[in-house]
Length: 516
Image 1 (cartoon, rainbow, N blue to C red):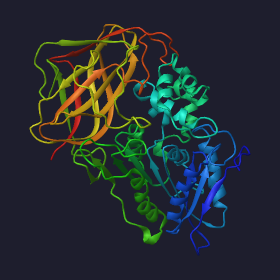
Image 2 (image 1 turned 45 degrees about the vertical axis):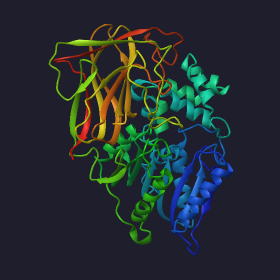
Image 3 (image 1 turned 30 degrees about the vertical axis):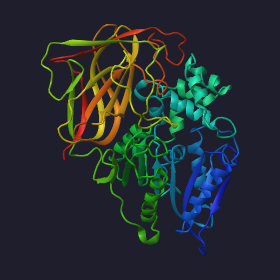
Image 4 (image 1 turned 90 degrees about the vertical axis):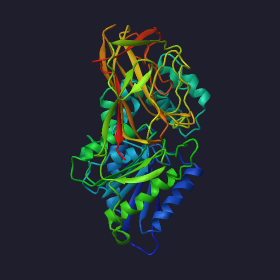
């Protein structure tokens, strides 16, 4: 029973022949379908066989629990109430861990600062302590991610997302109407996610705890190179390094809760296995079960292209050489700083004809690695390409683009995408980002676009390509270029964009090169 009188239901699995045992708590935000029951039953029996009690509890309004479903906002209060309930159960010996990904992971972060009747260890997957950052990267709105989640989870039951409906909703104006156009009903939490772009009271309530540095027990974090929560998860990781609790990080070849496909290679790293197997060692060690378990590597990452796991001592890697690749004349990407006079490359951004999304980090089946359009396929995309690599080049770590730009619009977006062109000509997306801000029309501005992180080995003979544009739709909503709120706008204007380059002008890509 919660503080406001809502009953939360749970399934309990117990180890055979043991009166009291440590407990693994999983708080599930899904509806009570046969598939979800079977999946939770399988994982519960697996852990119970290793000597754990397993409590699978529905969050408010889900999985037989009472109350109305409202994502994120009740997890702190309801989670704390659950901890106190657990502490009074005769079969619980006081040792506790939590497990789960995405919204399951949020139920962990929201109470991770607790010290009374609290978990002794957490395993958080594909989630972060700051959901706002995943919904508003670079100041834009992660439209496809927010709309996908809303269509999947609104109402009394989970639904399969119809991408025809999603795409129809994504084009609605204003953006606030996307849910109604796609689903036929108003979805209140979608409107809040679109509206609350800053660190508002809504997000403070949704996050639950103050920040990742407040975590009071060991944290194991698992993310994916193409998961939308990875950038904010890596911020959580950085915050944890300033504290005294033990932490460990895994980054795999994953989108959100699934393994990506890498054309021409088989990736043997099933997401479901990788989201469970590390928990055995982590929980056994921190809860003292089965002899205490073995240590995990502090950092474990999967290198795409090489298709191998590797253990490291830190993230970002201490041996990283942050290497600039300059945007130069003729659409070239060069390690040598340009010596030519200042020059400009121009394009026109029309929000009514946006650059379509082709893969990347978002929710749903369209995320991940996708073969990219050829150079020149669109007039509103500037492409800069390196010479063929003389030797294999490892790029592992955070990627960013530092650009000098101007626009005739009072507000606009600039996007950047890093692409690997393999020797066979196949072009694959590696990392991308967006920046939305205001500008003084036709005045140069220096900007920095956070493109997330990647771990990849580019083979000899491959080329690197940087695409600059002003839209990536519907992954991000469209900036109307009018200066008004993008979520409330009902009209567009065309923006004329300029990218500046040449001697003394800061326009380059920064890659985290790992010496080999």
